[in-house]
Length: 328
Image (cartoon, helix red, strand yellow):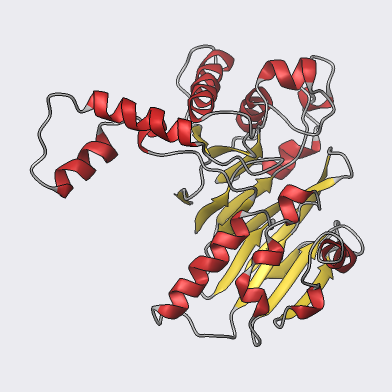
């Protein structure tokens, strides 16, 4: 099982600026002073293996969208701007003869309907192709109404009815496990304005939890500190936990409490208690630079060490970036 991250930002897209690109180039050239490169291969090796991530790459700008690789059927969580890139990639595969022109199946699981989670759908090219099947799932009621309203005047010029694929909306039962695309899928209600839902995907002995837009408080009296906290069971033993850690600790506790997002502190504590194997911080704050996000990842790893009494812990920690792929 592989998970591909098409969009990792929260709230709204955060495009990289010309000034930021310039600073990366300056840092790269300074790092290359005194070096000679015989060919493009040596240059690429230098970029990939000697420059820090924040210089050679970027955490990205697209809003939330991930894909769980599943053979011929697409398993997708949320429809942020990353969904447009997923669709464009699918179209390239068609041009290369690696996908049929129609007849593809896309399963899209919606955590909730804030803009950063739905704004990519009107630009999802496969939705305009007759013969494609698109199934949109969620635990909220009136799924179709939300998508239809987004694609109506005065918000968008192209109505949902202009999409020629076979699009169907399916409301799931929160108390039951659903069998879709060969996966067993269960859900959990999350604390977030308007309510969001997390999803657990299980197949062939592997598991992934997608838990975006969820607030877990870390104060001493909070429910998250209790051993009966329902998320501990939902996260238990999962191979990969994709966790909303949009804020640092100060923001989560002081300035942005009750905004519906969590911090790396909650991510680490819940992961350790639930015996999660790999943690991926997600829903990155749009105002954070690459350097800030890099520092956040380092702070998370340091907190794991402190929380585990300075002893080694097997938990693997990543911070999601657009274009990342994780093998589960």
